[in-house]
Length: 273
Image (cartoon, rainbow, N blue to C red; front, side, top):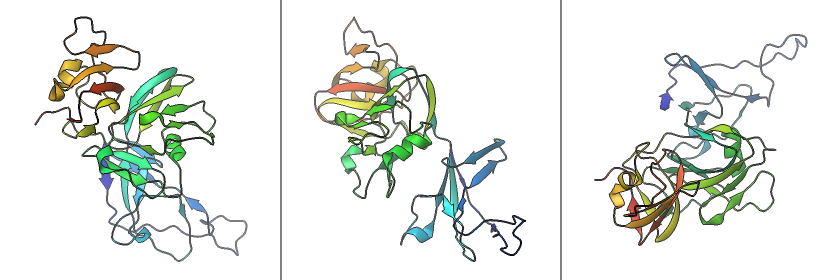
């Protein structure tokens, strides 16, 4: 779910009065502020990281992604739009899981954006700027001391606190191996990809996310590229080989990740034109 809340009225945050030392009237200069949004329809409160502020003042010519928390500055004014996103929930079992990054929102470290060929047609990438990919996993529900291991496409790796991390981007539509020491429910931030969104597959093996119909057979789920791939493998090692009577992979799970082998570069989509 992605709901956008536009602020029409101004909200004031009052500062503390220095002369009344025994009374706390408001914020101190430099104090960090957190936005909470109440959805009256859902009867639910959202707070960061599910509240993303977009502040026009951060860059020229458009909005910049929220890099909060906000800092209180007396006699200052900031105009914001607030976007609330609940993301996609995924259930992981203890051990290795193949997770599909099936939301439109991706992230990357630094200022050099991923190549267009790496992205789904509906995906958008956000620079972490002065932050790290580790911050994304923190917002998903992982603690900095969790025994987490992530292996992305091409063998890039992330583990909290490691000085040897090579995973620098999380790409919409791709699949990621995650090791967790115990069962866990996490939230992948962003609105879900549409069935018509496309992902370019290079020849050979690709780690992909599945955002098609939940429970579909592999033949149906990958029907748009029928005849252009030959093998699909899931996280448990179950296999689907086109035309084989001995397949062990019978159904696809939405928001899971899979290995797929294609005979040439292809465009994957889960709803055929």
